[in-house]
Amino acid sequence: MRTLHSTIALMTLALASTLSHAEVKIDDVWVRATVPQQKSTGAFMRITSTEPTTLVGVHTSAAPVSEVHEMKMEDNVMKMRKVDAGIAIQPGKALELKPGAFHVMLMDLPSAMTAGSHVPLTLVFKDAAGKESTINVHAQVRALNAAAPAKMDHGQHKH
Ligand SMILES: [Cu+2]
View (cartoon, rainbow, N blue to C red):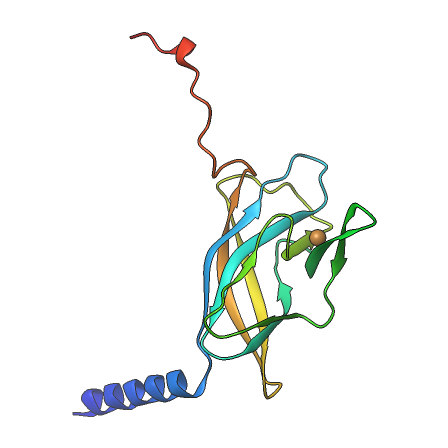
């Protein structure tokens, strides 16, 4: 019976923590592959939350510096800057981190990011009460044009 009791206790604990915390979901996490000598790249993902929360920071073992960035047109020039206050996420409205918009910047890369490899990312969120929590994800490294189907070279096929 001891085993059963501790199982029930664990289940109760799990349920309690689900009820008392915002549920943040992170999908489609990827990092843009780099070429040799390239020292920075972007990480992208879709984030949704059941409660208002703010993405305030990112940590990764793959880069000594990682920041939350935004891109904005200024005097007809696309400029990128660090978002010090973080990015607010409203319930039911997905936050899309994507090329040309909000993104996570990984800087001072010690080595190239190769397509197909994985990068661990720790995302830091702050809820409405100011309490911080973290979520760990694994981002897949992809070439920028990986989502688009490659052009078929029919000349190489012999039908
Ligand atoms: Cu950036």
